[in-house]
Amino acid sequence: MFWKKKTKNSNKTVIFFASDLHGSNVCFKKFVNAAKFYGANVLIMGGDLTGKAVIPITEQSNGSYIGFQAGEPVSLSTRKDVYEFTKTVGNMGFYPSEMTEEKYQELKDDKAGQQTLFRKLVIERVGEWCEYAGAKLKDTGIPLITSPGNDDFFEIDDVLDKSPHIQYHEMEITKLNDFEILHCGGSNYTPWDTEREYSEEEYVERFAKLTSQVQNMSRCIFNVHVPPMGTALDQCPKLDENQQVVFEMGNPVQMNAGSSAVLDAIKEHQPMLGIHGHIHEGRGNIKIGKTVCVNPGSVYPEGILQGVLLTLGDAGVESVQLTQG
Image 1 (cartoon, rainbow, N blue to C red):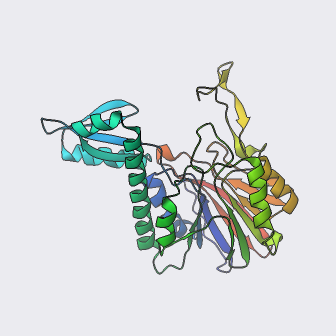
Image 2: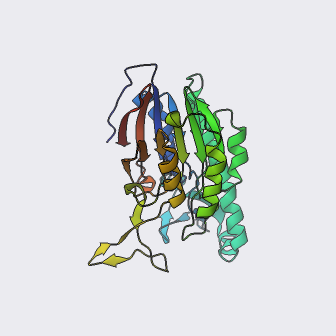
Image 3: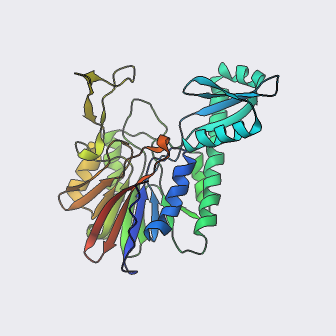
């Protein structure tokens, strides 16, 4: 459920943070509207805006349509059925695409064509999200800040950079009121060989470049997509060589999949706050030394937005509230 919490002091910096929406239209709309709902004056999206797959909708000779969900055909008799199906899969983070049966058969054996269509639809949706955010946040003075996750195609950078409504940052330090934000996206290596992955050695170099620019670590937010290694924020099911969940005694085996370089950077520099995502199951709020670290988690396929409301003031992090709805 959503638990509504209004800020009592307009001088506070109140951040609503979420991550890993993976193309879910309904989750993005909830995210943008969460600012008003919770009384937040800053929105931060922690990366992985990109969804996972295209869902073809093919027109049949009798005027009906067939969609696909979880690999199974779904009969769509009317245009209203198509509209409702399109809305449903869009809210789950997929990219519906109407096409002829001939085009569908052509694409089945054309991996390059599939990838071209996928990237086109991703870019279009990011553009639609930019327009939606602009319409909702115009004249509110509420910034929407985002940075890339490991799944985010480099092609979306240009769309986000050109949006007058979104502040897109990667590998830089920015100011937020009396605070600094260190932006470091992507992730360490994953089983899926995604778009923006880096070795731990590369992360050490990335942090060395960024941390040297921070003026006051006690007022700094590490906006780092991948969570620190070996914590409650990076626990997820272990996968075998076929990317299937490993079970023991009927229970999924858990493992840690965060970054050791991120953990080391937090331990060494002790920023005020670390905001992370990437591991959808790693929802939580912990401390590493003096640093508060959070991962809101993600259950985007269900159309549910998980987030965290953070109140910052003179004393640093004054409150942390995990949200869901």
